[in-house]
Length: 309
Image (cartoon, rainbow, N blue to C red):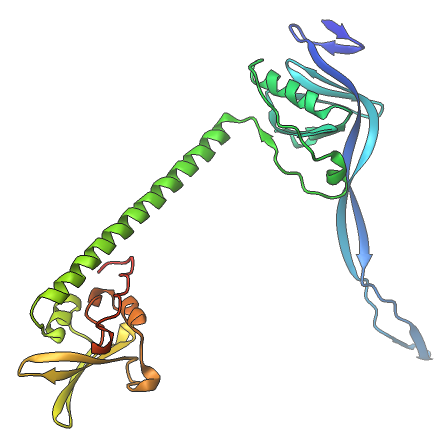
């Protein structure tokens, strides 16, 4: 059994770093806020009137404070603090992560009771030493931390913990690659939809006039309500897709052709119930390219929604 300045070492264990240090601990402080006192007035024997009172709300806060002085060691197997009031050892096999400050280290163990926050002069040297030990003496670079323990003691939340688990690193990299694949697939699908949309637009411009109602029914099927009335000289046909909250009004053009004249909410024809082209195509995506009015024919066509029918 080796001995180093009073520290008992296991067989094959050697000290690679030692420094005077201070051990910090997290303390819980409970205070009561919002309390109000009342008073009692005796009216007669056996009858007392008491005003309302409240005890307030218990508020729990935590702060970090120095616990004791001692020596902090890093060996090839453990990180150890030997102090005047407490001693802590964290086996490197149980080490989960550590955070380097320019004036100390915070060590996280798989055993919660072994959480260790120590302060000393050269935090960078300790962090570099611990990193090399954990990586089998392989060259390792620990970024210099401008942040000191003062921010943590003042209530700053710990951040930037150095994770030493390879499984965690693999998980993070895998999640990033998955996100890249998903984004690429979405972009590819969007480009493909734009190409299809452009082809449909060119086809619409070059082919002969079509029966808008016949093509709508062929794509989307019959609506919940289909009615035809005479509005002056030209018949008006209304197709109401009630579940989609869309009603389309057509006027007869020629002997067999219908032309779209209005988009609205079912049961609310007229100006107050009008629906824009974008909203109409979102509600009835199977009819994309068929819902533009004559006055909108020269406008750019809206992009087809992601969902398909």
